[in-house]
Amino acid sequence: MSSMIIRNIGAIVTGDIAGPTVEGDTIVVREGLIDFVGPESKADTTDISSVIDAAGSTVLPGLCDNHVHPVIGDYTPRQRALDFIDSSLHGGVTTMMSAGEPHTPGRPTDPIGVKALTILAHKSFAKLRPSGVRVHAGAVMLEPGLSEADFVEMAAAGVRLVAEIGISGVKDVDEAATMTGWAQKLGMRVMVHTGGASIPGSGVIGADFVVKVQPDVAGHTNGGPTALPLADVERILEETSARVEVVHNGNVKAAGEVAALAARRDELHRVVIGTDSPAGSGVQPLGILRVMSWVASLGGVAPEAAVAMATGNIAALHSLPVGVIEAGRPADLVVVDAPLGSQAEDAMGALAIGDTLAVATAIIDGVWRFTKSRNTPPTTRPVIFHQ
Ligand SMILES: [Zn+2]
Image 1 (tube, rainbow, N blue to C red):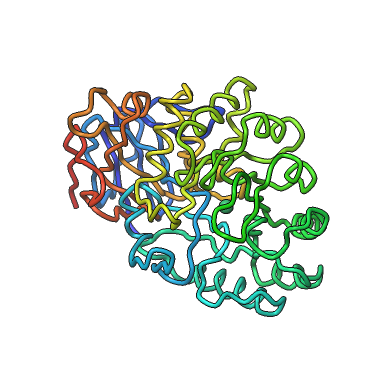
Image 2 (image 1 turned 90 degrees about the vertical axis):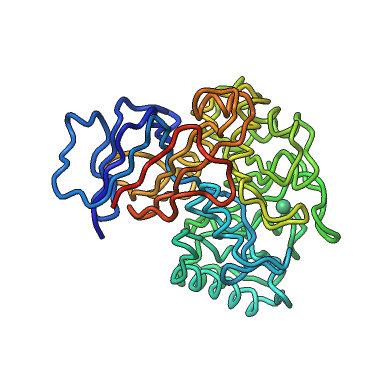
């Protein structure tokens, strides 16, 4: 691995909701890690092998998608699409969190089959990084008959996620609460599906269920695809410590309302963003960028906070080292700008008026993965790459 400098940065948005911006125009990357953030006059620029001249554009942490439904590899049978993960990278996404692998053809529902599939998905994506993207998969779908010993075995194999409860066989709230307790004791993060049914066979889940189960995440509170009443979201914020998720595959108006509610309660750190892709509404390469713009423009939330909901807030939830721009962290970054033709002057201004950001490049482990996004419009400022 080599070294890189990003200079002439117009704004650095850190992803940390407690300190969303940092002074400086320069980021230096060495050996895949962020080495320096600040003014170029203070940077050590010896032995730099590649240079990005950001031309006044904005740098964010690589975006995290808190809600994807992968299977194996960069293929989704849900929409019969290849390379949906690579497509999302071109929308700035460098990390994906599985909310379950329900689209697996012939998905087993007996305990040994559930365990095998979960461990396979986890171990497969631990070795495979499609286009460099970090996919954290192997989210166990709860089925009747799973025992505490099964959870111990899965945890020992590295499984850290429980798929959104409500889309698999366990529908009974007491059974869901019991299994959630086993999983959380082992350090797993548990999500509950909320709102209306997503596909035939999944149920309607409201605040009563979430309060009883006490998960780590109330999934897609703005709908997946049909939204909860806002009063239920407020009860979840009041009576649990769960994060509330807002997704692309949901109700657009409710996305703004949930964000505004969290802002009124001074709990923006509890909002996380996902796509819920692939879904009936498709694969959504720009889904995270779009939800960030909904939350900022419709929810009236500061654009820098919207960025944190798709980066640092998710990293904090899952105890990941990515998601924040800070020396010592993995150098997963995106260079973004107002899209060419936007009425806004810069990236944060574009989010505030509801525009989808333009991505100049995504960097993973200190390596830029492309020099022109194939999915966003061009940036207003011409970003230049030298190697
Ligand atoms: Zn769901």
